[in-house]
Length: 89
Image 1 (cartoon, rainbow, N blue to C red):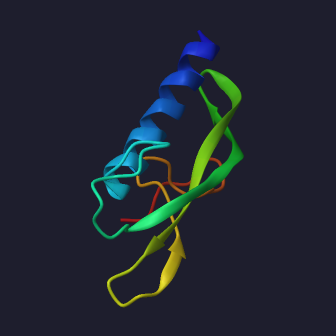
Image 2: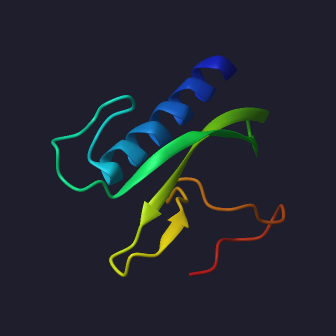
């Protein structure tokens, strides 16, 4: 069950990034200007009702409209927060 949960989360994160970059992993895209590029993965521990599990989160540099590059952050997986605290609205 835990392996299935980890695989589902990792697939969801890869698809979220692929949608933003408009290309899948190892794909060159359609020849248009790239919005950014992938550069590996980082490990992240998630704690939930299923216990603590380590997942691999893809990393990417995203080029903003102004030309500034920033590190990609998943919208599906918010940054760390203390246990018991809710995400600010």
